[in-house]
Length: 89
Image 1 (cartoon, one colour):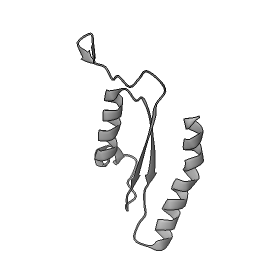
Image 2 (cartoon, one colour):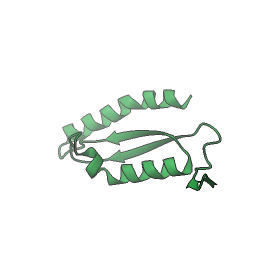
Image 3 (cartoon, one colour):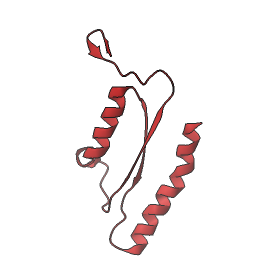
């Protein structure tokens, strides 16, 4: 759909929320995340384009190479799930 010769997402007719989940092995410094998180940026832009403006992310970063790093990253992500669920309602 176009409004004023500009594309307008048609999925903004009601509240919609998109939660993006991704896992990575490395710890990415916050300053480099925009440049290195291509998939995250791509999906976020697509959701905005089609009209879904509430976009949350659950990033399981830093799963590392040891079992301890992996478990810590998973626990951090799991601890964030209740916050994301609260946003749904």
